Image (cartoon, rainbow, N blue to C red; front, side, top):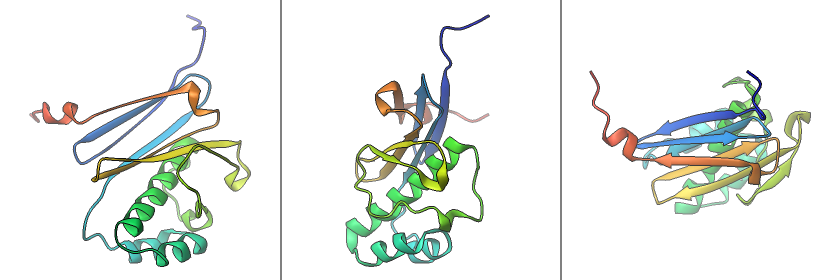
Length: 153
């Protein structure tokens, strides 16, 4: 059967949140991360972040530092999920430093034009949505209720 359009989707979960992105004209990548208060952000950033991202991170303190750390991490994961590359040893080459979290048009690694937005979901979660088309053609849904009602067998 020929559908009038293709549906692209991606899913992410962390803590008690599940988030699903659905794209109608583009592949999509989405990531959500629960903020872990005592996480070794410095060590993780040193191993996985571009030098520019590490520099900017070192200039921040407190909540700004934590927000930036998770914003960069969700951007990297959303991009990797969008491209289908998966986690690899070249994360340090991918530079999302200095981006303000609003919808952007970027061309990392020479790929297609990239549209990306990041946001805080309350004080415990940060998420990023990435697509190859303007984000007004992408829908996303999130819920913490799906996990609350889940009873493992």
